[in-house]
Each structure stands twice: as C-alpha cells, then as structure tokens.
View 1 (cartoon, one colour):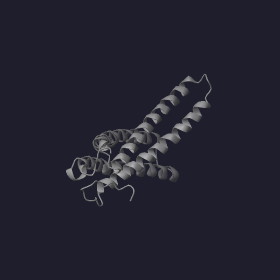
View 2: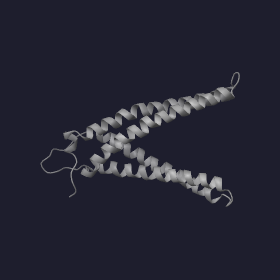
View 3: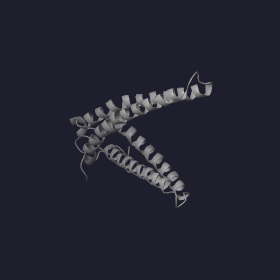
View 4: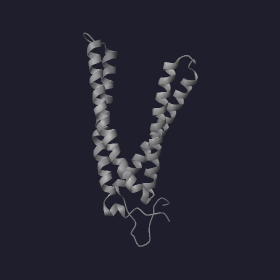
Amino acid sequence: MFLKVRREGTRAGGFALWRLVVWLMLLLAAYGCVQYGAHAEQLWQALQQQAPGNTEAISQLHGMLAWDAGYFVVAFAVLVICAGAILGQAWSRRTLQVIAVLLAVVWGLLGALQQFSQWRDFSRTVEMTVQGPMDAAAQIALNHVRLSYLIAVAIRAVGVPVLLWLAWQLGRPQVRSFFHGRR
C-alpha cells in the first residue's frame, strides 16, 4: 500500500485505533474546510450586494467573513497535520498531540459551556414567548431543536475523551516508533 511507511529494521504496523482516529480528524477537518469555504463564499456574495452606505451590515459581514477565514485556516492546518501523522512524519506527532488537547479543551469543554448557555437563553425565550399549549408544528420544531442539542452534547461527550486518548497514544513508545524524520 502506498500510504504504508516502513523503515528498515522495524516490523510493519498492523491496525492501530489511533490511526483511525487521525483519519477521522482529517476527514472532519476537510469537511470543515468545505463548510467554511462555502459559507465565506456566500458572505462574500452578500457583501457585494450591500449598498455602500449600509456600514453596519457591511461591518457585520466583514466580521463573519473574518471568522470564516480564521476557522478555514485552522481546519486546513489540522488537515495538514493529520496527513503528516498518517504518513508518519516526525514533526506531526507532537503537533497533533497539542492539537488534540487544544481541541478537547476549546471545542469540547468551552464549546459545551457556550452551548449550555445558549440552551438556557433559548429555553427562557421559548417560555416567555409561548403561553399556553403549542400547536403541532411548533412542538415538532422545538423537539427538533432539543434533539439537535442532545446530539451535539453527545458528540462532545464522546469527542473529548477520544481526543485526550489520542494525545496520550501519540506519546506512547509503540506509537512514537511509527514516526520518522525526513529522508
């Protein structure tokens, strides 16, 4: 297989769960690049359609475009680092360890706190807006939002330990031996 790297004097590595996690990270980072790129393109088109005197809307669109560009750059960097780890490049092992811990903390824990805060605000808004029984369409929409929230929480609950486990795995001697310097 052309992606399998084998150094002289070492045995070929078989299946390793950590490599599967790195592949998953690579695919999710690639998906993030596509999503942020597509959203940035939509924002750019909306920006081109704004009247020159509409400074507030233009400022908001520039801010959103800057966030999309930042997220795109980070997702692309994660993609490159994961590709380096899959190919066994020594420079990527430590970098991927740091990225895994940072993602666990920032995306997992801080994102969960932000999401919890948004859920509380949303619940208060629903309680203040809806008085009496809800119609069927509103109840279905509310149930969809609740399900989406629970799925996002479950993904974070699984993702944080997996990312921390990956960081730990990348420091183990068996995994370190997979990585090699430049030839």
